[in-house]
Image 1: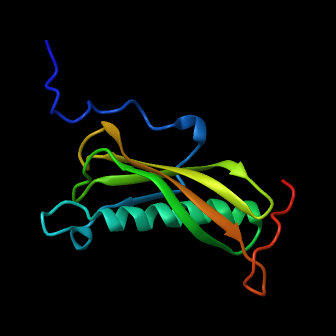
Image 2: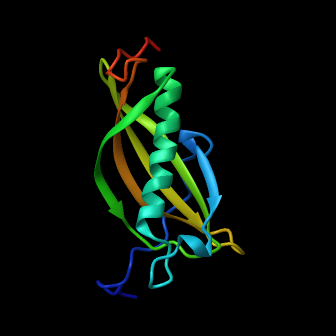
Length: 139
C-alpha cells in the first residue's frame, strides 16, 4: 500500500515517557476554538509557554520571563474534547537563560491513541527582584 504524499503523517508513537510525567495535562474546550472549529494555535502556544515557564521557574528557583520562541511547528490539529499533554525539558542552560523544548501530545477523549501535535523551543531568562536578568543557581 502506498501512502498519499498529501496525507498528514501517521500518528506518532507514545509520548516521551523518558521525559517523565506531563508538566500540564488539560482538556481542549469549545471556548479555545478558532473560526474553523479547531483548537486555536494561540491557545496551544499559551499552554506551551505555561509549561516551559513552570520548568524554567523550578530550575531558576524564581521568576523567569519568556524572551523568545523558535522552531514552532504545528504537526496536527487538536479538537474539542481532546486530552492535551505538555512535556517540557531543559535543553540548554546559560548564565541567566535557558532553552526549554516543549512537545504537545493529544489523545482523543474516548480513545487511547496518542499523537504529537505541536513542538517548539522556548527561551527564558531568570529575573531578579529588580526585574533585571540574574544568574541561574547551580543545579
